[in-house]
Length: 388
Image (cartoon, rainbow, N blue to C red; front, side, top):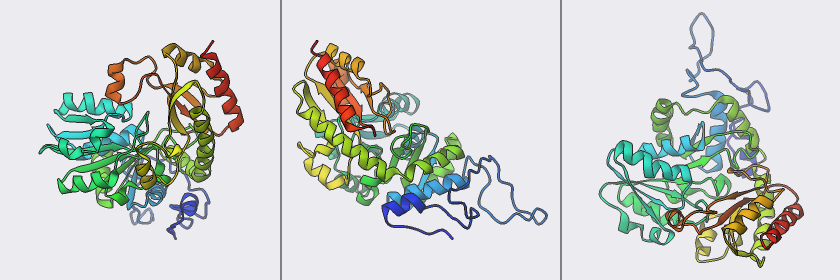
C-alpha cells in the first residue's frame, strides 16, 4: 500500500513508492513500454488505468506523486523538457488575440515563445514589465488579459515578484497565473499556497541534479492537471520517457542534501565576489540584501548555487574572465553537480540588455559541489587576468 508523507526528507525518499504494487522493489521499475493491453477474461490481467505511455505510465506517475507532494500540491505532470511544461501551461490559458503579462527578465526561450511565436501564430500580445512595473501590475491589465506569467526569482538578475498580491489581483479579474519555479525549487517556494494556479519546472536542473536528463514538470490542482494531461500533453505529445522519469526520481532522492551544499558553497562565493575590488555588482538572493529583502524573506525558504555578477571593467575584461576559468566550465545549463560560468549579456547592446532588464556584461555562475576553496582560487586567478 502506498503511504503519503509530510516531511521533506520522507517525501524525497519514499513518496510515490508503492512497494506492494512494485513487488517489494525499493527502486520503482522502469515500465519501458509504449502500450498497456486491456484486461480480458482470457488473459487474466488485473484491472489497471493505463493504455498508452503518451497519456500515462506507472514509472512516470511515481515521480509525479513525489513532485506534487514536495510542493504541497494536489497533482503534477511530467514532460519531455522544461519548455514543454512551460508552453503547455501557457497554452492552457491563452486564446487567439488575447493578452499576456510577464516580466522582462524571464528565461530566454519562454521570452521567444511569448514575444515571437504566439503573436505570429495566434495574435497573442504580451506586455513585458520591469521589476518596478510589476509592483503596479494592475495598470497593465486589459479586458483581453488571460494570463500573468511569472518567474520568481527571474533569470539573470534573480528578481522576485509579490506572488500573493499578483495571485489575488489575477483572481479578481479572472486571469490565470503561471510561475516558473525552477530557481527556488519545490523545496524553497510553494507558489500554489499563495494562490498561483500553475507552477512549472525545468526538471533538468535541481530536481534531476546530475546533468544527465532533460525533463519538465507542471504542478497544479487535480482538475487543471487533468485538463492539461488530456489536452496539451496528449495532443502535443510532449510526454517524458519512462527511463528519464526513473532518472529524475533517482536524482530527487538526494535533492535536499545537494541543494544545501550548493547553497553553502554559493554563499561563500557570493560574499567573496561582493568584496572583490574587480567586481562591480553581485546578484544572489542568498545575500538577503537590497530593495527586495522583504520579498526574499517572505517567499524563499532557502537558496541554491546560481548567481550572477558584473566585472568592474569592459566587455574585453568579461570575455577574458570567461576564457580564464578552469574549474568553472563554460556551459549554458545549471543545477547539476558541476560549476559553470557563462556569458549572460557579455557583449550585448544596451537595447538588448534593457529588453531583458539586465545589466551589460553580466556573467552567470553556477556554483557546484566541488571544494569551495578550489572554486575561490579559480575565480581569483581569472579575475586577476582581467587586469593584465
